[in-house]
Length: 158
Image (cartoon, rainbow, N blue to C red; front, side, top):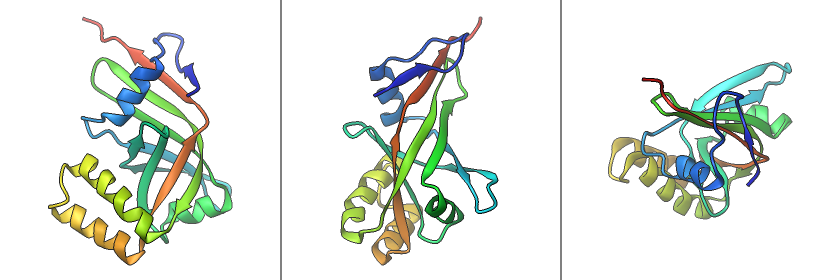
């Protein structure tokens, strides 16, 4: 895992701290994902994510025909930023490459992990809806392989 310092006035998180921040996302942090559209213009999407610690990859569920999928078909590189606005201010940003995961049988167990992490249960309206979308093949996963993590931790001032 390549980690660099994001700010001159902050501390860089260690690899262990970065993995813990991303994998044990107890504050339900969201990812801001930057893509480039067909006109060459930037777009930012805010989305939930699942970080798989062993593989050091992000997974994002999305509709198969979403705008972000259309953008990524032209250029499979994204930028991302995940930060906690509560002290101590921490975050990670970077760039990564995206692969489309479309195999329904492989996506069902991934959806189970994703939804359990995101909602705490598969027994709620959103989880049931998304699992149905995965099972029908109308929703897929984006597998994001980060090139690096630019991290920060800024202690709050009294």
